[in-house]
Image (cartoon, rainbow, N blue to C red; front, side):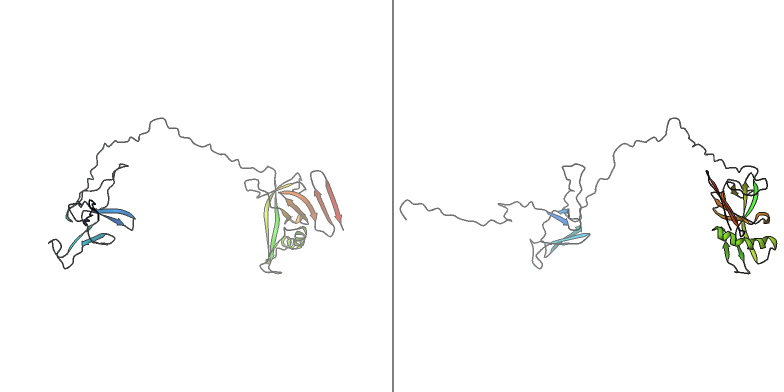
Length: 279
């Protein structure tokens, strides 16, 4: 080494966190709740271990069986967690005062301040009660001068087919096949024969009360309303014109036929009338 050369000497001194010459311990502890995934409390001490439960939090300082700072062989602090309290400010969070021991209790101020104002719910003004208009329905009235007419609709002949109902309104053939049975009912009235019929109200210009093409037959001679009999083929159970059968559509007689060996059928419409005779 030449004369005049200076070699610097570097001296490294270890510095520890607990060295009060270099560090001032301002530490504190926060608790995190894994259920709510949020910070829920803080502590003024610095434990070495933690045990957390749903409602309690345990923490302590290591040093079992050895003296720690002359304060005993083992220290542990136990207490319920204190949640953070937020003020209404959007920028500042408020934390309760830091308790120094587990016996310190922080009492929250829950008193209410303000002015109570009574709200008036009285209504002022003029009320108008509206009543919806009453709907008047006028019942249809049958015209005067109607003739009563009984029209067969079916029968049960217990001598031929016990308990079997025969509907005679389906077709011209059905009603014509029933004429002999209905004649027997009109003349002899056998106890094994039951005839079903409806009472009609015939509107016709025929002075004898016989139905003619274009006449209207209502249901129920003495019943109110203007309902007409159902569509179908009918014959009267009155013997004086029982051989004639009537085709009804919309309550109107549209066709009249005779069930004798020589059948005469009369059909009418608003423009033409056709008469056909079949031997």
